Image (cartoon, rainbow, N blue to C red; front, top):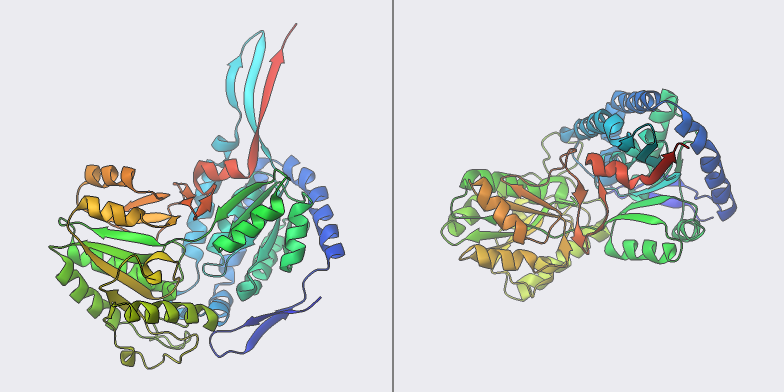
Amino acid sequence: MKPIQLISPVDGSVYAERTPLTPEAATTMVARAKAAQKPWAARPLAERIALVKQGVANLNAMNDRVVDEIAWQMGRPTRFGGEFGGVNARTEYMSDIAAETLAPTMVETSDKFRRYIAREPVGVVFIVAPWNYPYLTTINTLVPALIAGNSVVLKHASQTMLVGERLAEAFHAAGIPADVFQNVVLDHATTEALIAARSFGFVNFTGSVGGGQAMERAAAGTFTSLGLELGGKDPGYVRADANLDAAVDTLMDGAMYNAGQCCCGIERIYVHESLYDAFVEKSVAWVNALRLGNPFDQTSTLGPMANKRFAAVVRDQISEAVAQGATPLIDPKNFPADDGGAYLAPQILTNVTHKMRVMMEESFGPVVGIMKVKDDAEAIRLMNDSPYGLTASVWTNDYDTAAALGQQIETGTVFMNRADYLDPALCWTGCKDTGRGGSLSYLGFHSVTRPKSYHLKKV
């Protein structure tokens, strides 16, 4: 098998290299996962929860090493630390609700009948995780899957392949059996063959629309449940009654943090005409205060994109938009670290339209387009004019207005006065080309279990 290389965006070097499993070894791996699942599910729920929480605690103890590795693998500045604030919060919440969520729903308990609906693990859960938030996105499914009694196979993105190794190291040290949680390196062909062979009870994939389509094709006819989060083009809408400074600070952070490489990052903004000029002026000042540089430099607030080919996509979108009449407001000379490769200067574009790729296709980089709107109706029309639907951010000071607008927006999550955030108590889901299924909240347990009905009669 051809080795898979991890090319660091920091300096273009080969940071890691791993050989994927052969098809035969992969089949054996799945057999081990299936054999280990029922004994794992037979353990008391409290024991599974304790082991999972200890695994996460072990992960926290690796923080210094993990922060450096994340910087080398995908470029995030070390000043922002690891991802363990969110990892811990999601683990705690899913652990806290597990007993109630997984308990049988009783319909009748009498001297004649006992009728109830139980939740049963699906068996082997396959997680195909992305590189942009490599720990958080894995934890979203890994924690509930293990707690619910499934065994788990993790295939991490090649750009962050060491993340899977750290997770396995931490969870195995906690006492979770090696066959219950396996981290593997697979090529695309073997991955698709395993899915087509009904190896898994549930497949969770986070990645591109094309990747999701490949997953669906591989699973066709197997009736394997799929959870697909396939990206977004998330909008923000700044109404006339918005807090302007708060909107600028949060929306620009949502557009630029992690070099714009956020599933729910802000990629397009619509501003009421009464605030438009001030919003644009303040946004330009906010972005110009960023510092692009080596992620190990504590003054860097913006690191390289994870790969130079990802940066090339964003550069192409910006160039095309400018050629079509868009106005770039950020001078790349303010960001001398831009090397034409993975290090990319941020950009704000005005005079943009929905005929431009930068406003319609996922950018996944530090660029955002801003458009002026005259009212709610125009903003809603533009927000919905997208093939994606992950999150939408509405800026207003009225709950009822935000909720009413949210009902009209085609999206998985409606935010009011915030953006680029996951609440573990709420379902993380999307619509349209963003995919299907949901993680986190009590519904996250439903994804990794199936209902089983019991109708028991005394005679």
